[in-house]
Length: 183
Ligand code: ADP
Image (cartoon, rainbow, N blue to C red):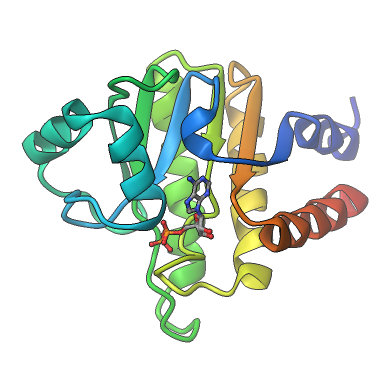
């Protein structure tokens, strides 16, 4: 396979969907967590509510996660087997290493998924809610990071990005189309 057709094949393992990430039937769902792993609103609140108290109990034991990193717990009552708690950066205007940190929390999440034998993983649009990352800028970074990680992690079959918001879904669709076109 030529290198660019290899990248095109990797893009085929990425899927975008509209819906509630807590309802995903995958091995692991990714949570947009914060450093203290103490829960919050947005995706985090939805996951904790739907999954039940076991997830928070495990988060308390772990205690902390650095920005750009991820940790893993069980998924309580959710259909997924694991929740991967990834901490994206707070948007500060773009000059505080946000791009690298956003990419790295996606890569670390997929590496953790692989270490736990996951073949299917669903991500929310990390950092685009309370953390204020402009979706037009976050989308290509998140998608390119997932594509890069998938080239190294052949056992991960499918990565889904799941959006509660239709507009956001459209932004990521356009970004993925651009990445596919350049592959
Ligand atoms: P962050 O603090 O990393 O910005 P948020 O949880 O505030 O994380 O938001 C991240 C994104 O997740 C937002 O774009 C928001 O629209 C979206 N979101 C919120 N709830 C859900 C859900 N249940 N499923 C999928 N996406 C969700």
